[in-house]
Length: 263
Ligand SMILES: NC(=O)c1ccc[n+]([C@@H]2O[C@H](COP(=O)([O-])OP(=O)(O)OC[C@H]3O[C@@H](n4cnc5c(N)ncnc54)[C@H](O)[C@@H]3O)[C@@H](O)[C@H]2O)c1
Image (cartoon, rainbow, N blue to C red; front, side):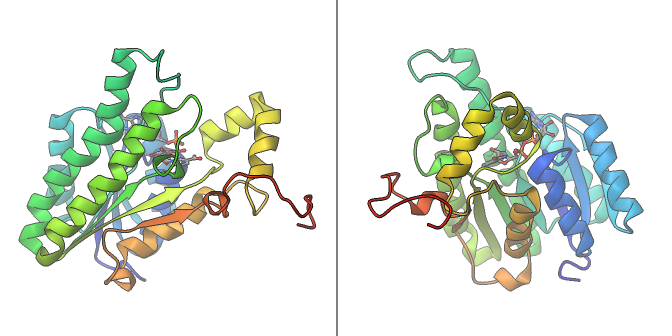
């Protein structure tokens, strides 16, 4: 068990990458607080963790509310006595061109996808600094490393998350805290599965753009988070691990030497 006696909080863990991470951390011995706005999803995930022999508790919370984030960290320490791992992962996605997006959507995107990561980190640090140990993992994205058409707000918050990760890492490194990010590529979580069904041509083009020729599975991101959360990553700090099947290794320029599956 790589996380025996550790306590983890995972936001947005009622679905997708957060769900896979909560289950993976619990399978390695961590007591996990499953935090989500979607109570049904959070209850299901916690039930599945318990049925598999793990320890989980549910907190129905909106990460867009600073009070609820304060409560989230207090909930974990009241229940389990400490906090070792915080995985900031929840987002609300707003699409739209930079020149057309509404101020309201921009603000909501930033509140939920960036400000909440900072504020949860701030609250967690108060506990972790006292323990002189802790691991914070933020879900970034390849969309924080380059731009996407129609996802300007998302691009901005994910770039912000990546640099918040670095700033946190350097400021708290000497206090025993590590902070890292995982940057997934296209991962088959419920929103992506839905868009794959409704836009099959977009899905085909996305797969073709990924050197490995396929979308990733949530567990393939959860495994990276597990590594970053564990003591095996004891000298890994302030980094962003890209897990994208090779997507960002490519300039985007088509092959000059042939194409197709044999390539
Ligand atoms: N799926 C991908 O292809 C992909 C790629 C790169 C990065 N990511 C990142 O992974 C993370 C998880 O995305 P996912 O694809 O698993 O999505 P998902 O929709 O499956 O899960 C997100 C969860 O967050 C919860 N949530 C949303 N707003 C919330 C709020 N205000 N308070 C609490 N919970 C809230 C939702 O209810 C949902 O359960 C996000 O940060 C996303 O940007 C995903």
